[in-house]
Length: 272
Ligand code: DGL
Image (cartoon, rainbow, N blue to C red; front, side, top):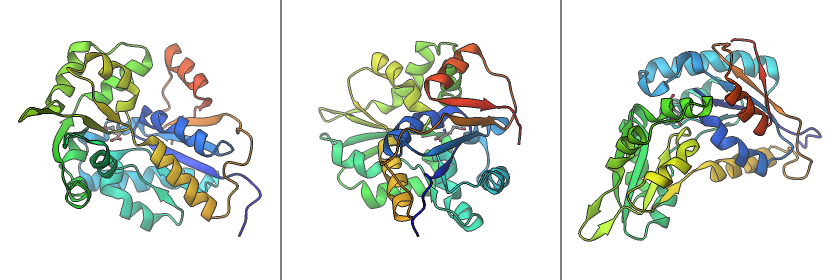
């Protein structure tokens, strides 16, 4: 049944990684009403056990879904999506759009057949990621690189504290492989925090590569699903600013406040 009002999307991550999906989402669905929930009280998700994470997600999403009248949930987090998408789809009677490493597009883009996947240690360890590679990664050799530090470095950068070059360099170094005269040419950004550091990666990389950010594809998927559900998509004006809620209820730095303004987000201070 067609809806007259634009869709309300709950954008979710453990922290600020969802910002890397937000712009693409606004381009694809300019009229969408956005609520961004950041579960910073439990950041980083990469350090949580799978079962604990699935329980936490169902728990932390229940109240905003019930109270805010959302039409779809976009899990802008690879660490959460690669373990909990089935549980979330069972728990909530709404379209749940996940974010998982872009293995298939990487295989299509790579000319040398050497692809690296940079994600949290949890994401690169998961069966979900290994199955994607087995099913869609044909013809390429994949190097899986798990980082336990990069998401926190991205958070610091967003707060206005510059992440040191050396720290970034050592985290991305294992992605760069030389083998039989060929070099890695595609690196999948398998954590939504990492596109926030892409400009930094580009300047310190030992050679140029394609840094594959899945955000445009995820946003297109969300737009298609919502259009199929009868919502106006891509026909209205840009919506009002979105709201961002931190589960910790923390105060934010002036640098982060400026970033929220740039992204069209207003901080709402009610801890979950
Ligand atoms: N942004 C999240 C992801 O895409 C994870 C960061 C974390 O909490 O460890 O995987």
